[in-house]
Length: 356
Image (cartoon, rainbow, N blue to C red; front, side, top):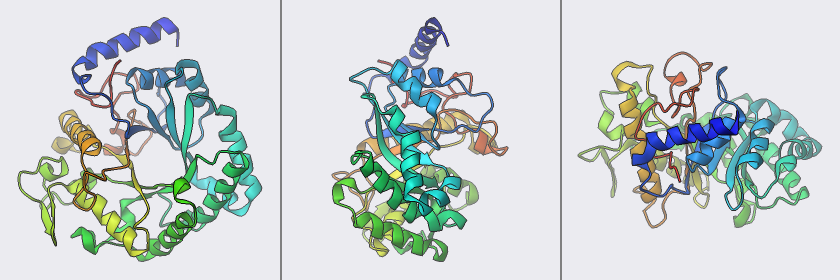
């Protein structure tokens, strides 16, 4: 993409999003870059968009050398892009079996791209592999990658994994939540490994939370207002805790389950959240997606949950996703993007885009 085209594109963004620029962007909130599309912008265009929108945290689902090379070309000090980068699920068996494979992985996917403008915050061992066939490799892969990072003198980077909400059962009320029998042992092993590390280099545990899917599965009992952070009355009471929105109830259910396997000291990061703009009729519109994102953004930036009070607050979150992805399964899965692949916004206002 020519530089004059990038400048023109950013000017268009400025015109589109000027009404969303009054608040400073949250340092807690990043965005996921999914690549299941055959019409996505170039790496240069993507990094230009992140810079123009003042997005400083990016989650990748695999190593993407072209994208990482574009960072150094566009982002200049003192700006820094914080990265959470994943080893793909199909790589976990090799990473678990061989310390040398982990050293090679770090040497190929991380070390060539270390620059002052790129911070490899978290190395994620797969995505939503627990429970499942590859779950047995998670902890050994984390151990080997932790050693490989130490070997590369990258002790500031942490290792973790990402789980879906499906690892939980008995989630209402949240205090009764536990991990499913299929997920319980791997979650215990994960907690034991993280607690064996000094507190300063423990990895967050990432949980993907989508109130949309819970509402869509049971709209009779889970109201749209509670799913969108707009409840006008409490959603439920759990002992002395009162819940006004579905997201908090889901997040706290994970905290309760984590406590029950000894993980109360660990910090939880929201790995994905979002709302589809199409694919399921009136419950998936650009207006509802904008409402969810705006309220989610403000909630993560400013608040906590009944179990995690505001004085503690959320560690952070990633919005899913940067672009619509046409190779995802047909339906809502294709419509979580903040932008279409032609880089036009799917909806406004959009608190993720702040033009300096």
